[in-house]
Image (cartoon, rainbow, N blue to C red; front, side):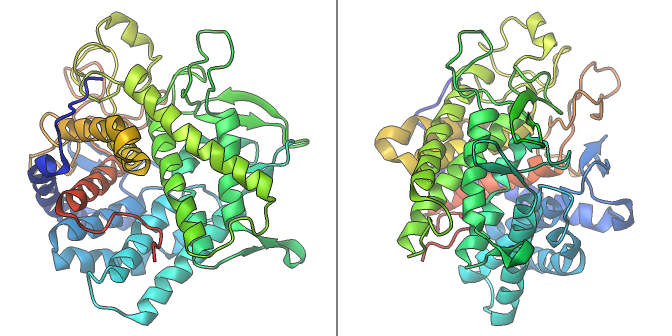
Length: 461
C-alpha cells in the first residue's frame, strides 16, 4: 500500500461533507421505497436495494445510517426518522437469540441515539435515554448468553452456525457486551449465576486471537502474522479446537479481507475501551482472575497492530482497496495486483470496498490509540484509504443508485453478488454495512478535523 503521509483529517473534510450530503438523499430514497414486509435491505442489484435472507443483521445499519447522516449534517428530519424507525422496528433485534450480530444492529441504532443525546446534539429526555440503555443492556446479555466453553478455560460467543462455530465477525459486535457492562449490567444464568459481560468480551477476544488469527509461528507459507480465518471450529463435547474454516472467504488459509477488517476495527475499539473502564472506577477483574484479565488485555493490544500490518503490507492494492480475498484464484492472473491501484472492473476477481471502509476506521483508531510516535503510519494509512473511498469510482454520485459506496461484495463463494451485463465479476453495487461504515468513517474524520468529541460508544466521563 502506498501511504500518503501528507494527508490530514482537514484535507478530507470536504470529501466527508460530500459523502454525507449524498447519504441524506439516499437514506430518504431507501426509506421511501422499501417495503419492510420484504425483510431487511442487504445489497443493491442494478442500483436498487434488495434483500437476501441469511440472518437479519443489516436493519440496524439501515436506520443507523439515517442517524449518522444527522450526526454529520444536523439534518433533524433524519434524526427523527432514525428515532422513529428504531422505536417501531428494532425491538426484535434486542432479544434475537439466534445471531451474534447484536453490536451491529443495536449499537448502530440505540447506541448512536444514546451517544448523540449524551453529547447534547438533541433534547435531553431522561426516559428516552433509559429506554436506549435498557435495550443495550438486554442486547448485551442476550449476545453473551450465546456462550461456548473452551478446553483451556476460556470461551467464545458462538455464531449463527451453532455452538461449535466462532466467527471473526463477532469481534466488532463485542462492544455491545462491553458497553452493557459499563452501564452496570450483568447477565443472569441458571441458578441466578451472574455473568460478567466484560469478562466474556475479553475472553472471546483472546479465544479469537488464539484460533482465528494466524500468529506467524509455524514454518509453512500460510502462517502469515495477522492473517485471519473466518471461522474456528470446536468440539462441543470437550471444548477442544479442531480446525479453521470459512463461510465467506476462499479458504481457511487465505485472508477473507472483510473478516480481517472486522478484526482490525474490533480489536482496536476494544483496546480503546479497556483503559476507560479502569479510569471510570469499574473493576474490570470483577468475576475474572486478574492474571487472566491482564493476559487478555495484552492479547487485545498485540493483535490490533498485527492485523493492521497485515492489511497494509499483504492484502491491499496500492490505493488501500483490497480484493475480496487475497487467495482468490483469479488473482494469479493479475500478477501486478499488489503493485497498482485496485481495479473494480477487472475480469477475474471483485474488490470489496466494504472491507476498506471498515479497515480504514480500524487503522485511524489504532493510530489515535498509539499516539503520534507509534501510530502515525496507521493514521496516515486510514486516511489514505478514506481518500480513495470518498471519490469516484467508489463514491456513488448517481441519485438513481441507492447505494453510497460502490463495488461492495457480500458472499462470493455463494454467488450472491450481482454481475452486470457484459461483466465477468460483481461490481457497481453497494451493501448496507459498507454504506453504514463509510458514514461512520466520515463522521469520525469530520470530528477529528473540527476538533469535536471523539466518536465512541463508550462513556468517557
